Length: 319
Image (cartoon, rainbow, N blue to C red):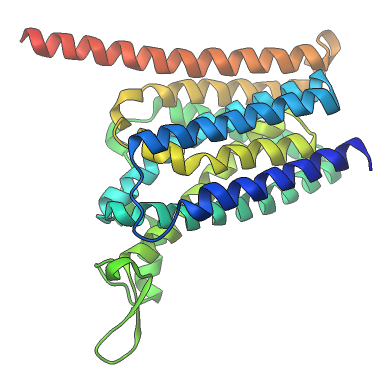
C-alpha cells in the first residue's frame, strides 16, 4: 500500500468507529445533550482531529500535516458561523430540545455526503481547468468583503428563505413537529410533512451554501485531495457537539464573523496572486503563514468579542 492509501484507510476506520460511538449511540430519539456532555464530545472531536494531524506528520511529513491543520482550523471556524444559523433555524421552528440530537444527526450526515460530492467536483475542475482557482479567489474576496460589512439587521430569517418558500409550494407542510416524526397523516390519510422535516432540509441547504465558501477556502490552502477531504469531514463531524456547546452563547462571539471574513479575503488574495507569491516564498512558508493568519484572526476576533461584551456589561451595571 502507498502512504496515501494507508492514511485514507486509517482515516476511514477512525471515522467509522467515531460515527458509531458518537453519532449512533448518542443520537437516539428523545436524547437531551447537556452542556457537560457537549463539552466532552467537542473535546473528543478536536482531540481526534489533532491526533490525525500527528498521524499525518508521521506518515506524510510536515508540509501536508500543516496544510491539514490550517484547513481544519479554517473549516472549524466556518462551522462555528454555520452553527449560529442552525440555532436561528431551530428557534424559528420551535424545535423541542429532545429532537435536537436526531435532527442534527441527519443534517450532519447529509452535509458529509454533499461535502464529499462538492470536493470531488471542485478537485476535478481545478485539475482540468487551472483558471478555476482565479474564480474561486475572486469569489472568496467578494464573500469575505460582504461578510465583513454585513449589517446585523440583515440577519437570516428561515421563514423568508427561498428553500422554505419552495417547500411550501410543492409539499403539504404542517406547523407542528409530529411528536418527533418527519411525516404524519392528515384526516384523509394523505402524507403531511412536519416542521422537523423542514428543519432537516434547511440544515442541509444551509450547509451547501457554507460549502461554497469553505471548499474554495481550503483549496486556497492546499490542492492535496487528502487534506481537503479530511479537514472538511473532521470539521463537519464536530458540528453537533459544537451546536450544543454554543447555543447559549450566540451573542458572545459577535465579531467572529469579521475574523472569518478577513481570513477569506486573505486566502482569496493568496489564490489570485499565487504565481507571484511562489517566486519569492516557498510552499512550506506559505502554509505556515496561512496557519498563523488563521490562528491570529480567529483567536483575535473571539477575544475581541469577549472584551466588547465585558465592556457592555460594565456600562450596563454602572447605569
